[in-house]
Image (cartoon, rainbow, N blue to C red; front, side, top):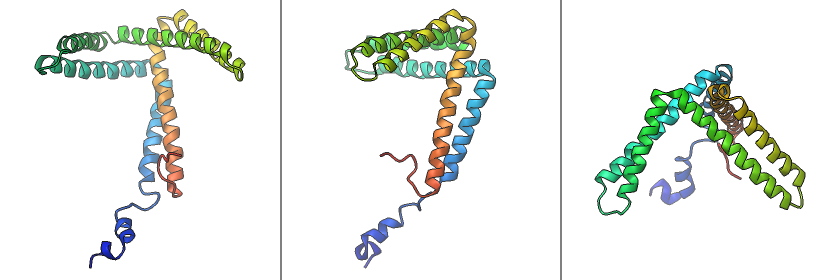
Length: 194
């Protein structure tokens, strides 16, 4: 008689790693992410350059995949769209790879537009709220002021803002991973969902 036939729980428990297994890897990942975030704040220009090249690589991959789907995909009506999207993505990728500062400038403009639109929506939504109206209105005003600040400081902000955004992302990811690793070391599931 197999172990499973005698005790299904015993057989399954051999396949489940012990509580806290792998916490050091999660901690190492968090520390590395935290360090990358700090470096991005220390050298925002280099981080902006890296962010621009990374986004260019995504556009390149998307462009090649879409172009391949349009050229070699048979029997679907969106071939023209796929080819057009692929070509536009490849052009954007080329611009960002060979003119990374132009790409950084475009990214910064997109951030400014996003902040302005978000701020306007928050103000509009804030006026309709019964509770938390002041906070929502304040958030909207702050986002619009940030958009104005980004636009007013161009082109300097284009050289550093994407790097700072990347730094914030790495810092937050690092802190999240470190906290999760410490909880996981004590037996909690890693990145547990409640």
